Picture 1 (cartoon, one colour):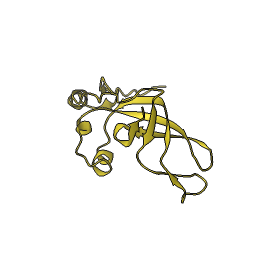
Picture 2 (tube, rainbow, N blue to C red):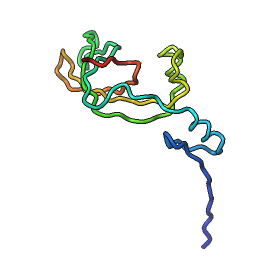
Picture 3 (cartoon, helix red, strand yellow):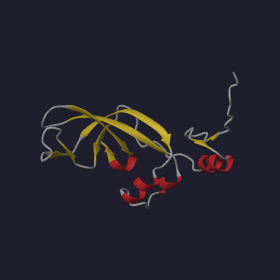
Picture 4 (cartoon, rainbow, N blue to C red):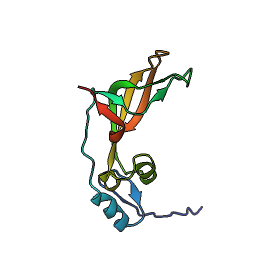
Length: 125
């Protein structure tokens, strides 16, 4: 029985490991650089956007929690950067970090996790 093999050549970005079909696209991704970290694991932060309680969405609060994980660097999400962050930052041209914040809802006391990017939170002293 014959087996058919298909050889696929791919190129990847050395920063985020995203695969591309051409070396030019991989080099363009490499050239973006990377965002400097603004916080580290264990830092207390306040998420700027109000959150809703899981049991009653009418109860809004500002979440304060601890960074438990940092993912990335990831390629920037153009739509997110332009629509939600205004597109005025240099983040459009660099790889970004995603911070996982663990916090407790003040209404129902449920422990929750939420991934955020650097412009979405403030580090508490």
